[in-house]
Image (cartoon, rainbow, N blue to C red):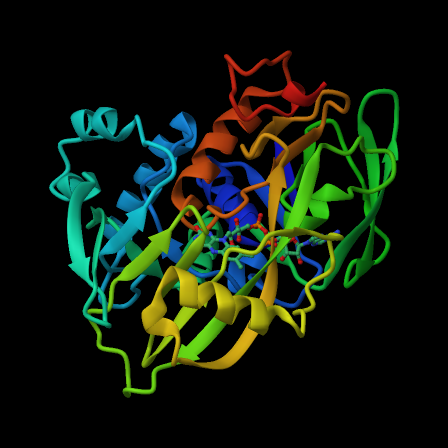
Length: 365
Ligand SMILES: Cc1cc2nc3c(=O)[nH]c(=O)nc-3n(C[C@H](O)[C@H](O)[C@H](O)COP(=O)(O)OP(=O)(O)OC[C@H]3O[C@@H](n4cnc5c(N)ncnc54)[C@H](O)[C@@H]3O)c2cc1C
């Protein structure tokens, strides 16, 4: 079989690595010159294992645990950093995960109620997660790509999927712009995979769109008036306002949790975002009031309407597979979603409901 994966973000590369390691031929098309130009390269890189969705909860813990185990002196995928948070919902899977694993690191995944001294001297009562970490997205993308290259893997940069030709119930050809500008016909064992991030919300004509919506979020770099941030600065996260802040070298990265529905290619930062951020920062964590905004950027988090990613075969076209909608958790899920989708991909198209596959695209029809 042959997987033609569109999109070299963390989603596309994770599936490429899993399929290539199971002896599937993989061709990965990417419209940019390198992986990670969009959400996968511009996110906040916080690994958070505490998750209320029961299915994502197990996956994200598995994935973060794998990252810790794949850390090496040559390549640090994740740096342990205590995560202090006020969650809105409870993670009911924590105990099951802890019971399932006999791993030496698993105790770090047990959340503990405690209190922490904030930089202004105030005390904050919150949940502490020792499994928290700051990821290195570039290192993760490289690790996944190298893993894919151990199998039968071809990477085609600067190649954009421009259109598809549809037969009775399958895609018979694709057209591309860029390095391979003529496109190609699909044979009986070819399967097209959409791992196109925010562009998955507006697939080529002929493919029925799923209810996926890109949401714009801004991230801000802040400079402290008191000098460089110390290396033991934790991650603070208030879920009721979606405000989080973490260390980035001598500075901080934070967001006020904005999420504005936008078009799939609207990555422009809003000029007025800084004002709204500063106001929110003073409410969420008053110690940030005298920090200086150094720069900011925007990126898109793509959510299905029910908030759960989409992994599985299309209900209408037999050789189309979806691997998208990873919202605000895609980076943390890097080492779980590839294997999950690879199992489904290899099983082939079938009638599915959420009891068989909670992430099935069939749930929308
Ligand atoms: C501001 C922000 C903060 C975030 N913070 C975190 C965090 O702290 N922790 C966490 O775990 N996650 C975080 N995320 C979420 C995470 O970044 C995403 O879930 C993840 O990166 C999505 O990966 P993806 O591969 O689906 O999409 P993308 O990274 O967008 O990749 C899609 C790729 O498809 C390519 N493509 C699209 N259309 C075509 C086409 N027609 N032909 C060829 N190529 C195409 C694009 O060029 C792109 O490279 C954050 C996201 C944002 C925006």
